[in-house]
Each structure stands twice: as C-alpha cells, then as structure tokens.
Length: 206
Image 1: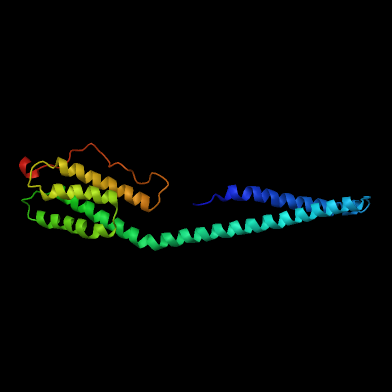
Image 2: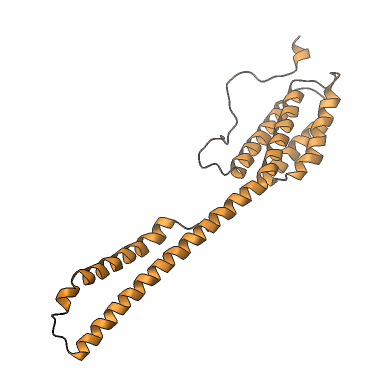
C-alpha cells in the first residue's frame, strides 16, 4: 500500500525540529546554567534529560531518513512496473482498436456483400487469437457474446449486433482506463449516443 508521506513525516518532523529547538535553547543558556547550584541528584537528572533529548533527536532523524529511502524505492518500483507493461498496454490498445473497427465494418455490411466473409474472418481472428494475448475478463465476455451472435447471423436487422458491439466498446474503454490508471474520467464508461440513426439493411432500403 502506498504511504502518504505528509502523514508519516509531520509528527517526526515536529519532534525533530522541536528537539533541535531545545538543544539550541540549552546552548544559548549554557552560560546561565553554569551559575545554577545543582546537587548531584539534580545534575544527574538534567544529564539524563539532555541525553534523552539528544537520543530522540538522533532517532527522529534516522526514522525520517529511512521513510524517505523507502518512499523513493517504492516510487522507483512503481515506475519500473509501468515501464515494464507499457508495451503490453500499447498492444492491448491496438488490438481493441482493430476489434472495434472490424465490428464497425460488419455493421455497415451485409452477408451478401463481397467482403463480408473477409471482415467476419478478421473479427474472429482477433477474437480467437490476439484478444486472448491481452486477456481481460470483461472484454472477453462482451466479445464472446458478440461472436456468438455474429456466427449465427444470416441477415436482417442488426439491433442485437449493434447492442452487443456497444457492450464490447464499453468494456474496452473501461479496460484501457484501468490499465493506464486514469484518475479522471478521461475515458467515459458509456458509449456516446449522438441520436443519429443506426445503420440498417442498406440494400433493403434501396
């Protein structure tokens, strides 16, 4: 779990600087302290107090240094992890883009079109091959439903295919947002709805 440095350092920093302040006060008043008439017991008590302050001061400084070291090390590990998965995340983004592009083409084609089978094969190749390489459970599930519907599609209304394609797009958006660790809503979870008509059977309308 990532530590919050401010909450770790604040009490230690306060103790550290308070200890320095006490030591400076004693140094400033050392001339007056020599005029104090202390018996042996009082002298030993003040000696113990000063040694305790010095010890706490040294301990606080050491703890602050250790926490700073651990935080720097954790930051370096996080950076190394991001660098290690950068290529994989870029590959995932490319595969998602081509998967969605193949679905978009299928929505605008009909089974009797010359390139229908070619585009359909493109989708199945991405689904059964590359998509498994960058496996994501939600994307896999949504794409699986679309694949089943596409496999049995022989023509006619595409409402079911369109609805399932939107589920795939939504899952891809979510997967990319989580992978790149976006803190803001940069990638919307819901598909855009512009209100324009969806493509239907173009040849039937001609």
